[in-house]
Each structure stands twice: as structure tokens, then as C-alpha cells.
Image (cartoon, rainbow, N blue to C red; front, side, top):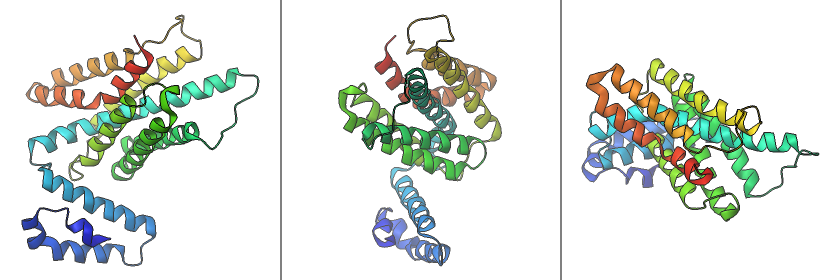
Length: 257
């Protein structure tokens, strides 16, 4: 497995450091479980692609993705949490709670749950493990949405936006994890999106229609507040907020204004 992954590195870097990477990999997976071997291989593949694309913690692109990553995790948690809330409320209001059939809709449901668990895990401290859970869930969500076809909403926009979110999380430099303040801010923003929309589905709010722009408005307001709090980082944080918004764009496109 490791041989093809090493070829992902730029040729010069592979010649200079390939043997060292191979030795570290073999030592780290000696006696390890299959899931740990897969995780180590995924880390090597991610590092190789970041090296090839120039996305490192010292590059502008790397700093941008590192700044956007916690926001992307929060957006993913809120987006998938809303999907789970909508399913639960619809089932709770029906005479008999609908069964989980082995179809793409059920895959979407469990993928959404995996994204929420992964994003919450990442934002509450276990960043690396949570990010990979969320990435796997987002990719599965994209595939299931394509298979669901137009019955769910848009079989093109939503999968593309989910894959963009997964790519952002996977490409963010792992040696620059977000601080506690950024993780808390992302969690609060996610809650400010999820709670009102869930209340809307439950019929608690005194309105009768969905408002697809609400998540974008919340994200924009929080992005502006974060940018103003640290003026030297205003441009970077504004750009990071834009990078974080694809899933909310998919929500607005599907739900409508």
C-alpha cells in the first residue's frame, strides 16, 4: 500500500525523504490494527498531496485552510444535524415511525450522523480523529445524494458542495490545528443555525416556511465579528468564511429563500 502512496510526493522530496517516510510508517503500523494502518496511510496520502499542491502551514493556502477548517466542521455539523432533525421530526409526526430501509436515503441518514459525530469530536478536542470521521461521512453523503436523484433535491449541487467541504478538511495542515477559541466559535455558530431551523421543522417557531438563507446569514455575521475582533487577520478570516460556506449554499439552493 505504501509504495503507490509515496509516488504522490513530488519527485525530489520522494528521493530525499522517501526512505525515512517508509521507515516511520513501518514502525508506526507494526502490530497495529487494520483501521490504524488505514489511518496512517491516509495521513501519508494527505501529506503527499499537500506537498504537491503547496498547501503547507507556511503557505498562504495552508494558513487559509487552517483558518477555515473549524468553520467547515461547524457548518458540516449544522447542515447534517438539520437533515437528521428533519427526518426525526417527520417520523415523530407520522402515525408510525418510518423504518430504515436499505437504500440510499438510509445511507444519507447514517452519513449525516457520522458527519455530526466527527465534527463534534473534532470541535471538542480530538481534532484529527474527528476530521477524518467527518471527511468519510461527507464523501458517503455525496455518493448517496447522487444515487437518491432529484427526489432529495439537487443531485449535483449538494454532492459537489459536500466534496468541497471534505476536501477543505482533508487538505488543512494537520500541524496547525485550530485553537480552543476558534473551535468554540465554530460550535456556537453551528448551534445558532441548527437550533432555529430544527424548531421551525418542529412547528415551534411562529412561521410557516423554510428560510434557506438563514445559515448563510449566521455564518456571515459570525465571520464579520471574528474579522473585526482581530483586524490584522480580517482579510484571512473573511476569505476563510467564504471557503466554509459551500454546504450552506447547497442548503439555500435546495430549500429556497
